[in-house]
Amino acid sequence: MSMATFAARKLGDIASNTANILAIELLAAAQGVDLRAPHRTSAPLAEVMETIRAHVPPHYDLDHYFAPDIAAIASLVQEGVIAKHSPFAFASEAGA
Image (cartoon, rainbow, N blue to C red):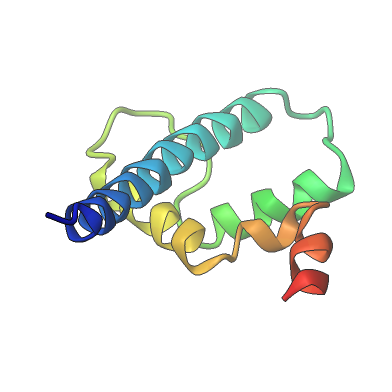
């Protein structure tokens, strides 16, 4: 009895959960960068911040429902938009 089908389904769940975790971490990091203003961040991180802030509102002053923000950033993670900012992105493209 093969477990490949079950493993493939589980891998899909793991990938989705990982994208959500990364989205939450990215939103928390973006908030931290916003709170450090007027200090500036590095150029590569500033590009990631621009991508994040193009999809979610800047700096949370009040509590609100985060599910739409998490979903928006998780989709960017799943589509590879965030990964393009990684210094390792060039290595993965060269191997493809």
